Length: 322
Ligand SMILES: [Zn+2]
Image (tube, rainbow, N blue to C red; front, side):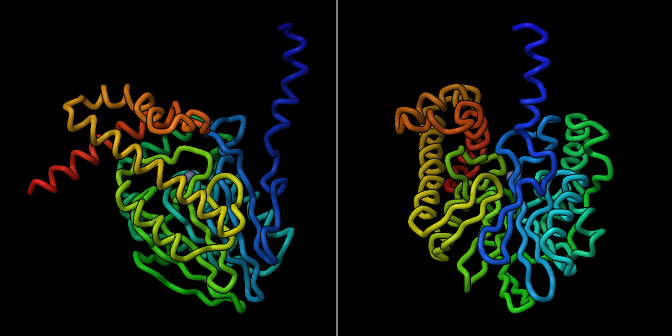
């Protein structure tokens, strides 16, 4: 390819990423809006805009779910909200303390929001892991894109359930289980049957099992089925509409977790090392269901999941022997 051709192509490539968070703003249901990051790993090109945020406009103010990956993106989120409502931003719920969901919090705090999260987030913010992760993200995105990004803790915590009544809306916050992280919370609007599920349901993509709670994650999915939502808003990817479709996606996530747990357990019991389990994971999973090959990031994430699961299964088996 000639250099000239590449130069012509470059602006086209960068055009594929939204230049402002509000460019992705969509109304999902009356008064319920979402902004949608590109479904991939964090890079300078996508500015870290890889996850979704949502907000509900009520008569007494705005309730936000998740804060995106940088202060700058958080500010763009506030600007997006301001195109729809001038009412105060009252609360922001963080569905889990992963970088792509809470790094933009400073902007929402500045706008006056109270932060609601699971209390585990406070332990996380004190940990070495949190500062290591921040340095890694700074290196990846650079000072300019990360400018102003601060690690912000919660104002209100719940490790079980709480209900907020705001402007005629009932907003239930539930910790259904430890699943994708130690700090998973969901928002449930019972009357409208809308579930803001964080990263507990992945459609068409391999879920990441690195937090070591795959067994309880399955319980979480049971609880989601019991709620029986009509709209499910995930932390990444497209909203899912309709009970049947949601059930299909939940079952899909369940099947993947069950299958990989079975594969890793069998290999573990046959005496394979963690490295061998990681290397064999894709082949064994494809024997169970060849369709896994079509999933986004299967070949990259599945071996990593097998690696983490090896230790989780080992822990479970040791507990059983006690
Ligand atoms: Zn996420």
